[in-house]
Length: 297
Length: 333
Image (tube, rainbow over all chains, first blue to last red; front, top):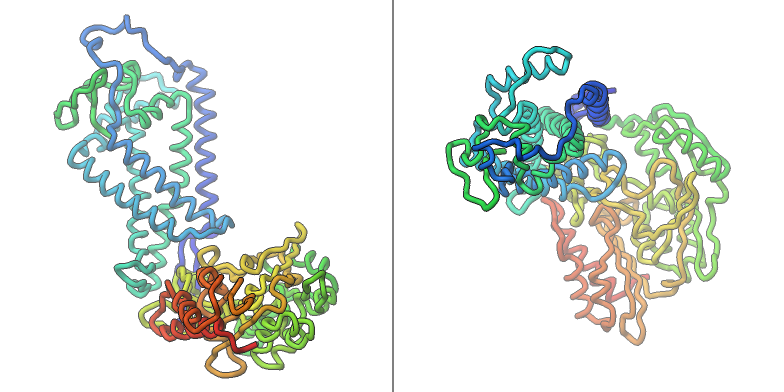
């Protein structure tokens, strides 16, 4: 297996062309391995210990004041957040299919669909950055010291330690934050290099000119683009796997309908860290009949 | 860069005597196998050391791939039939004069004696950057050297550029599409017959190939249906010199004209796109029109709609327009 593709340029120099496409299979294998490993560990350890059993509801009679005052549906994802997620999902899948199917031998006219999907993804990410920075608050996604200590306790617990259990997280658990940051890194690597690669395409605004960068620099651009794209294969496999797992169904559904049941909120989240009815900057969520909102990712 | 040495790198040569043997060889060696017809394109690649196959399967000994056979109302031409045989065959001349004329315009008598109809339609592009061994998109790299602000692209395309701007160099391919030919392809999976239109592909579909032929495929024959036999034909090729040169632009047209009115038409232009460029909008606009100067002028104008010339090939727009116009007026063939 090779890591990079090399070719000889017109001046007889060996130059980098891009990432070796053998790594696509490595990414697929890594994703499959992760899925199988998680499924086995979940089945043998957590499920065997009784953890992770799925309870659809908690008896409301157990709820006490003022928790009874909570709305039955807790808004987890605003319309804007859900719109961004699904636009990103469609554009990333389009990008991956148009990029890798031709490499795997499925030949079709892919270039135009690829760069248009790339521009859509870029616009969606710019929107997301502005929306998250100015409205939602970046604090929701930063990893803080509490996340790290709870994460460490969770790892110890998973390894069989009987020490103190980790506390409930705020709106975004540590694993969500880590996944977000890795996806953000891979996506930004792919789209920033992709935008530079637009110099090689004729558009109404400019004519293609590959000589804006040297061959070596183009090679590095292609490697970064390929590495981000290949990493996304593994990440999306993992994302889809967790999205379809039965015990995660309620959170997957929240990306469609926006809300989670009150019982899930009480079961999985710390109301102190994710107070219902107030945004991260203390804004009161808009009043919605039968709903309340805690803005965030 | 290509190293012009006239010394081919070593390869294992096979000369099978039957199509089945050839198929067994190309299957056994897969992408390592290079299928060679007359060798007019292949030997250039080998001598320039731009292509270094491990195995060459020479089809020259397969008799069943040679010859011109009447088949029902039409005709079947074996893929290894030489261009001279195609150009001089009396049946082809009388019924499909367009193809005879196109074959007659290929290169030189010596090349036509050795070059085959199958090889002529399957040959690779003549983009000089690519042929010189530069690692462009078509060669597996990530740059087109022919479409840059400083590139020499006088011979390159007007239509369907997609990273690569190379053109189809074949003279017979436009004629075969105009005649609604069908290409017979055999592989280990069996035989399939496809329209000539669909045999050629552009860089949008696969930047490394000019045709749909893949490893394991053999083009065995070309069939001409009777549909366009004896129609009004026109073929013209313009190149920098009269012989031994590839077309800058060529045009092939077949028209069924009754009482001065065009009933049906097929017009195909070569040298302007990575595949022979069929002018369906022009064909549609001609149907039901009378053959006249005005109709020809309109056809020429319609033909160049959407052309995107590069830095040095704007002249091809005018060339194409006038060739299409002349093909509708009809003088040659």
